[in-house]
Length: 213
Image (cartoon, rainbow, N blue to C red):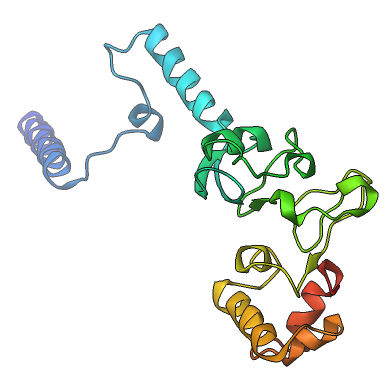
């Protein structure tokens, strides 16, 4: 009986060793998820804090936006600025006002938005009425000094000015200019629908922003 017990104990020991060997060779390596997120042993508290600060700084930085500056500026073009930038910053990037710029129409402190067209009118675009304080056929994306939105005169507006209208790209703006050149001035705003490519849906988007004079 004593000899039998020894054999049983020996068999159990062999079975346990075999199980351990099998598990070490065939079971996948397992580490708790929390261990994979542990910092390296050489990482100091200061380095960890700096990493957190860098992440917070990146998240707090304003996004980049793009604004098209044109009209009476020295260097018209598309400029990349931080969200929340002001009109005066864009004018400076565009080389400042040209000599013939009608500066009174531009709200220098206003915040610009992504995709905005910032048009600076020329002096000869100022109307004679109201002491030249309002514009005819031009738009800057701002309200005039009386708090009313200036409208684009489709009979005199340039291609650049027409491009500030919703849904009007360069090709469609040139079509408007070509149409009035061939057929004469528009009699009413609805006449713009006579231009190829401008139907009722397109007109409904711009009707409140245009005029004829």
